Structures are given as structure tokens and as C-alpha cells.
Image 1 (cartoon, rainbow, N blue to C red):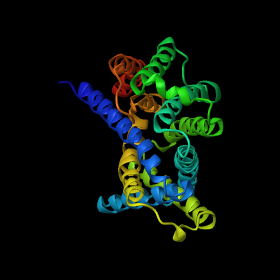
Image 2 (image 1 turned 135 degrees about the vertical axis):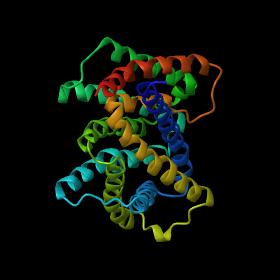
Image 3 (image 1 turned 30 degrees about the vertical axis):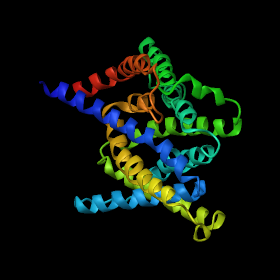
Length: 290
């Protein structure tokens, strides 16, 4: 097996793992917000994940960047990739079920593509990418089940909040390309620590967490959310931004399955595979040539 083929296989497997970790986050959030307010849940999520990654950085003998410019970029990344979207989704999932939230959030690749094509003008509008977006969205609806769309419009503010989170994720994927040359662990831990610094004071003022009585299930969901769906997921995410590119990485939204599979899952999986390949093969080829 050639090195290029091995690298391609590895990146696609990591893409699938990232999709699984972030797909599970919708269920963890739903359980967590049952007894933990959204701001406090996300503040704890970013703090725990940031501390876990910081410990790994120290264990690896690495040092975080010291220059203010890099930390300003970490702060912007934190707002785009955790503080705003995490909080919006946690708030929305108090009324929107995980299946519908997943479908709405699967619009992230569309916004990534549109932002790159219109604001940055560094993504070519090709038939392949447009086809990948359309087929991917079709696939995610089949996988989760079209019945999940029945709730669309009934909780409009919450649904718009999930879509706004998707726009933030699109911007974060594009901004994340500013960290080329850094170990992928650095923007992950730096942005999470910045997010915790922003959210913890807000949590203390708004929710007064010392007065809360979270359930055991919510606490377990919080730690799973922080360690698996945040610390581990962010480490993979920033690696894939460098190897698959922003469009290719956000295509993992089409692979998220947070609900039991329906009888139509076979059709959906075929659509998803075709869509992801259409959106990622070009970045992988370019990476292999570089």
C-alpha cells in the first residue's frame, strides 16, 4: 500500500471518528441540560476539556505559544468554535430533539462553502462540491429519518439558534486554517482555555452554579461531552483542517448519527459516502501532492 493511500485512509477514518464523537454530543447535551443550565454546562465542558488537553501538552513536553497575536487568534477561534455555537445548541436542545438538531447542524458544510466562496473567494464553485452538499444533506435526512423533520417550525427560535451555530462552525473551520505550522493540539487547548475564561464568569453571575443540584446522569453526560466530544474531537478536528481542508472537515456533519438507524439508513449511507467523497477527494489529492 502506497504512503498516499495510507494517509488518505487514515484521514477518512479520523473524519468518521470525529463525526461519531460530535454526533454523540447532541445526546450528551440533551441529557446534560435536563438539570444543568446551558451556560454552566458549556462553561464546564470547555474548562474540563481544556484542562485535559493542557495536561496532555505538558505530558508531551510541549509549550503553549507565548506571543499575544497567537492567543488573539485562539480567542477568536474560541468564540467561533465553542463559546457561541456550544451555548446556542445547548440552549436549543432544551426544546429541540437531538435528531432535528443534528439535521439543522448538518448545514455547516454549506455555510463553510458559501463563506469561502463569497467572503474569502478562495474556494472554487464546482459542480462536484455542489453535488456533494446536496447529496450529503439528502443522506443525513435518510439516516436520521425524515420523521425528525416533523418538528421543524414548531420551535423556530431554537431552530434558528442551531442554524446560527452552524454558521459559526463554518467560520471556525475557515479561521482554523490560520494555525498551520502549529501542533494541532495547540489551537485545541488554546481555544478551549480561552472559551472557559469567557464562559465561567458568565456562569457564575447568571446561573450561580453552587446552587444547582445536577443529576448523576447529567454529570456523567457532561464528562463524556467534555472528554470525548470536545477534548478528543478538537484534537482530531484541527489535524483534519490541515489535511482535508475546511470544506472536507466540515463534511463530517453528514456522518453524524445521534439517533437509532431507520430502515432507510442504507440509502442514506450511500448518499453520505458519495457526498463526502465528492467534497473531500480534491483536498486529499492536493495534500498528497504537497
